[in-house]
Length: 240
Image 1: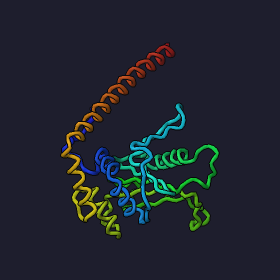
Image 2: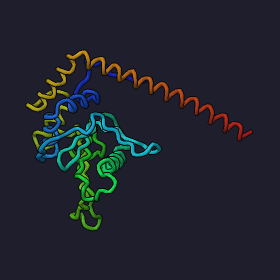
Image 3: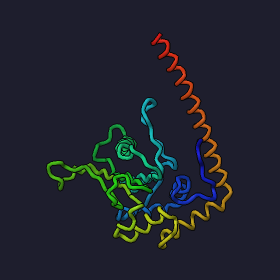
Image 4: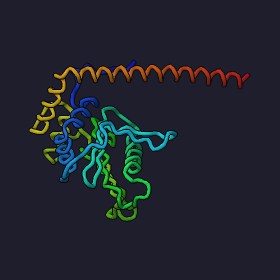
């Protein structure tokens, strides 16, 4: 049975609220990226509010949590609340989908923008107690040589916020952990969350999304049971 939080219990660290805040507050989204990446961003734009990339009907597609661009960079921000053994492979797949989406037929490879795939996790996937894990393609024979493919993956581990020396990043990761604002920026996030909860239209939207997810879950379960029964019948016939 699927479990959904009550609307009034949602925090910024829940997917619905995370996406709602960052999709509807462009200045907040830009400030978050600048704080986490320590870069200046001239502006951001949303190609699509719920960006889905599916190159071919037969291939697996991907729905990105928060996908934004500036003039020469693209950013995918993903929230990860639960353990996921496939997280590292997901970063690879998301990166490939973003590249496909950003290079039209006939364009040159140099036109690919710098891309950041960012995972904000409430657990330590790599178990090294680091607050930030940054990955770029490097040469095994000489680790100082970076491939230079303009592809950067960053995994933030909120549980290690005490080990982060940068006060802005530490404050944000702490907020992800306990949802208690500790600086001006996290206070702004908290205020926006409170404002969203006061709007009845958002409650109805959240409930509608849950009903849709429950329907898909039940349908998938039913189809799985049916397919399982058919497979069992085939195996039985083979054995006979």
